[in-house]
Image 1 (spheres, rainbow, N blue to C red):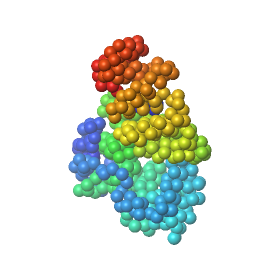
Image 2 (image 1 turned 180 degrees about the vertical axis):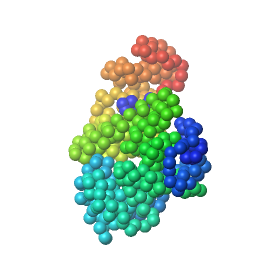
Image 3 (image 1 turned 90 degrees about the vertical axis):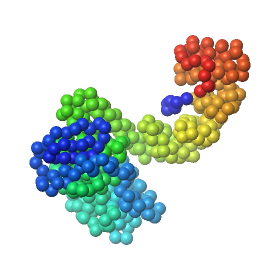
Image 4 (image 1 turned 30 degrees about the vertical axis):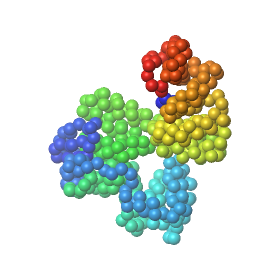
Length: 412
């Protein structure tokens, strides 16, 4: 039963797309510096090698090497940035960046605080942080934040000079492992009048970070490019995807805020987990559900959705235990009983499955549209046991309620 949780640029001639959505591009006549033109002319070949996923390897290694207190603090700064709490971020982050501080040599922390300062109008203080003498491994974070600020000032050529690579480089943008590098370069190109050159960078950004808070803007740029090519259907699809992600990210932020403000309330944390499950990010939903059932062991819905995640991961034994806990907390939770019965069938325990299905019939839950499979599975269990009359009776009930699957098939 399914869970009912519920690239490349060439400014002088042709641009070869990095993804299947891209179309061949026409000669671009926009003016660029010769340095930028040289860098971009090599991108048609570079686009054939997609950027590695994740964050820059050297920076990630550095982050992984942080002592636990420093890692916890960095995670908190990230959280404050996600929640859009700039004042709190600055208050917590500035002491950590001072000489001898927990994050004094961490580039990501410098960039997070610099961003909060810049967005709060403290541009001089932000610039000072971005000028910190950090190691080469930590510089990408600072340069990306610098590019973001340059975009806000509409200094497009400086963004391109900062982010586009020289001819012969492996990737068309510097810091290619960091998704924002692709997005910021794409925005600068689009605002310079070069949508055809921005499109493959948007696609690579979306490959690296499909759920990024700024993913909607990349889809909208792709929609604009599609309209430029007179492809109205693709433009519609891009706009729809962008709108969906804009709404989804809005819900995600709202759920995070609710958890931040009422950490002991189980419903906001459940909502946050379900938001991740909606986009099949089960590994990000699972820790929230695990914390939820640890803090609220009688919260049936938490156990059920944790069971769903483990069932979809193929961990049937653990999923069954979660459904057991759901039914202890709420014996009338029909989906858990139904899924537990399916797990019994999965491991060849038809009599135990039959007992759960019969409970659903007795309490009337088998008549709910999402649970009418109860009758089909009972029919198949009876048929396999040679109880033909019982099988036909249950199958008739299944068909009466709108079921369409055949009787003689493996129980599911």
